[in-house]
Image (cartoon, rainbow, N blue to C red; front, side, top):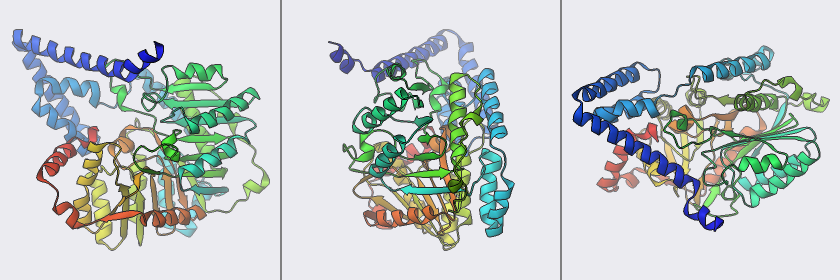
Length: 511
């Protein structure tokens, strides 16, 4: 009976139904008041006008503004209220105070590294400009005593992760958007339990929305009983709230402060092709060892402190690295995080800097291509200037309407000289940039509005590292399994597909 109940009334159904009922009640109340009280109609219109003025003068992306302005104009009675519930990306006073404290603590812990910046500047002014932006506006400095290893597929990351977890002696930190019980997670969980029982400090953060249909309700209780300290990011409650907007999309592993892993790969079986959901799943990650892992450690601890409401001494988790790891020469490595609540689109600006500074080529992999006018201008301008811009997106969609919007951007890019390819065997979930054999970024940041503006994200910026060429090699090898999209492909598209794509593009920032 319990199993039957779980099948018939899953948590996602209860939450969806509750939210839908609240929307229906809200609309019904508005209509009811509108029928009997003329002033309510006027008040609703006034509220929508205020919302429009607020949106127009807000610092948010113009495309995001349009995505809200149109529905408010179409439905002025409901539009203003809906924007108040869902459109604003703001914290209350208590949350702002907590977030500011965490940001200040990050700055105090991760001190600027001017000597490293001078070393980068001696090699390249452009590289120093990019690195300084990350240091000054994301508060994560660069390092040179760090090695990196690019992991081009989920199966390789899985084996490396198990291997490194087994070496842990002091602490293991994990932060993931999606975790699902199966071969991958169960194998990792077994190691985590064993380590926790031996005295290793094991901590896990998972996003409640990302795990809504993949983990049992209150799964954290089971993990706590197993000795794994657990935090759930932004727990879903069946109440209309703008908190639904912000999710923790990061994928981070830190082991003893000297080894860190990030990238697109979550802890679920499709990421290692143990099960097939959308054809072959192509993904990637990067493992770093050395001083730069400190950025990732602080990244995790700031989130942990924010969720737990505690104030730890971060320096207790900073290891004394062996002399051999202090003298690694593998270019420059700069892990960074992107916080959607600080009005600084770090991920997008890092991507834009790579495109704008490129002289020969920019190779990109992304599961979604839903971009604003600034990104379109950067890509098309670079392509028109002779830079070889190539982008790989999936052939098999995980979300059909999102894939339709992704494809709607092809024409303007291809007409300007950007080369678009689709990964024919299935779904590519990798998020990588590589340019001019000098720079690369491997991380969690998709080229869509949610990743660039609404989610907590992270990545690793690389300059003159051996992994840069590994990212390039993986891109070129993946290209062999791709089909190039040409002008002929979108000339024969049915009119109703174009109409649907045009409508969806208007609301793309809200997806």
